[in-house]
Image 1 (tube, rainbow over the protein chains, first blue to last red):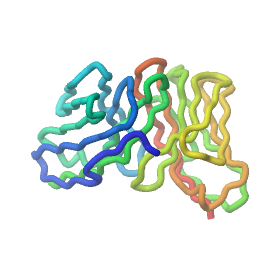
Image 2 (cartoon, chains in turn cyan, purple):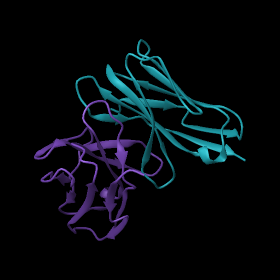
Image 3 (tube, helix red, strand yellow):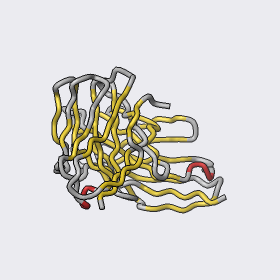
Image 4 (spheres, helix red, strand yellow):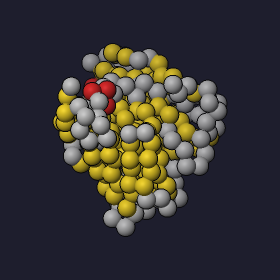
Length: 111
Length: 112
């Protein structure tokens, strides 16, 4: 079964609002990464958080990691129409570098 | 952006044909991956490689095979394509250690 699951599966918000999506995973990890995928394209890396980190920022993105709950969240602040995409978390099981992706959250930002 | 290339971008073929999906990267990355993704769905790891002459199956059983004769090249082959192979195939690479994956734009395969 897949390592990670995101929720919600789909999210629709107005431009300027914040978007929060969550990721849960099952096994111990070295790191967790978030990716964005525009329709019909490959994935683009957004941010990497190591297992010993609790929070990380990059521009309008904020990622948190709670290893005790095996969960992470991605917050996009002041969303823009260009943020419309699918967002995936990816984890590597400790001791491997096989990256397993979650089910994805489809974000739609309405102008 | 990332220097990883997949060809062809789109492929429509008939059942029973042999096909090879190409993936090349110019970043000198040791690790390379193939993922299968149905439209609007999650990605499934089908093959990965830690370096030349190193390939392993991923979590999703796949009838495809891969080879890694050169660092920069990681082709995926289907000996006899079937309609169930219709999907998007994404190739990725990364450096050693805790590094992000760099993805190609994918090959969308349709088997009729």
